Length: 170
Image 1: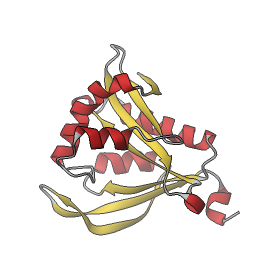
Image 2: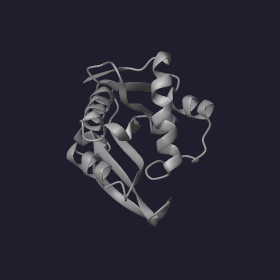
Image 3: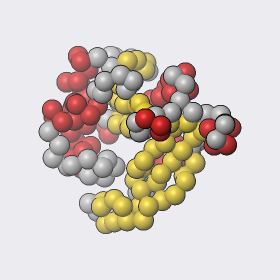
């Protein structure tokens, strides 16, 4: 598997699984009927935002991630990211590879840490992955996500400091 910067030519491969993930409403806090134009605008932000893809040995895009500052101005030193892996390709390591690359890039870009604002509690695969990559759950906001089959479930706010100074204020 190769992880690389995404290009506009990757969009036709990304959109079908992105559309299905959003429509399912299981793991993403997007409108379930998000338009292709709105999704593309969110997923390909202007710099310093970055979009990457995971590509299998056959050249097929099997996952993607977008990252950049979590907030603006005085809070722009903390990164955030979102990830989508083609559900037909779960279990092949794309999520882990994308996560590792995004963290490495955020460190290299000088961010002091990374925060995930909304990891769905019922998405245990993602919660376990982020914990294994060094993220901690700071809190779970109870009932903050309306899951189509499990009802109201929590959203994890997760964080990884890239240096002790990130959490000590130095």
